[in-house]
Length: 241
Image 1: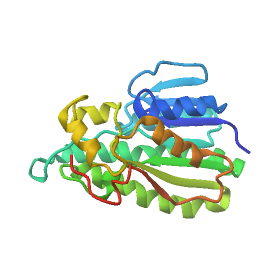
Image 2: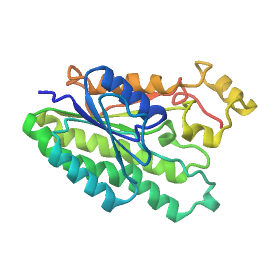
Image 3: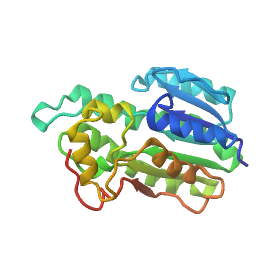
Image 4: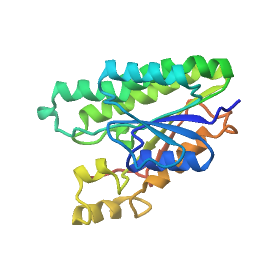
């Protein structure tokens, strides 16, 4: 039974905001866990949390799970912290581990009892095409690749209880803060990147949220442990940033 209560991390801007908007339009009550407030619309509640802080994440997870029966969870929050190998900071690696790996574990552990009681759950982790490797992405690629293995493991453990776990791995998505921290809007580099993508355009947040809501749909119960690359074909060929 779908309680129509979803938690989305990093739902204040970009891809996360698009996911929240789409879920609200489908009748979900959505809780956004983010480090900044959203443009709070009807059906959306904000929890301001630094998800790289394990103690703060656990406190938020416990509070939400005590007050709500969460049966849909989308972990979207992420940062890049780019650096070539010789400049990689272990502090950055640990930060991304906390954000990309530890936070979804802590949150899903808190939401799991309600999903098991309902014999229903939808979990989606937002990874990246960079999980396949990309220059200057040691910390980002490593932790985003870890999400793929984690999701496949969870899918095997939780499938008998009606809980599916899948991954959406976006390629270059314009109109997001993460993208434009690396590539300036309207720049020649941005156009060159678009021209290098097989579909000859950059992705948009709605391209990703459409894929996410396929996996969160109650009717998608026979799909689990899968990774869907929403990347314009860049996971098939090559990508140069």
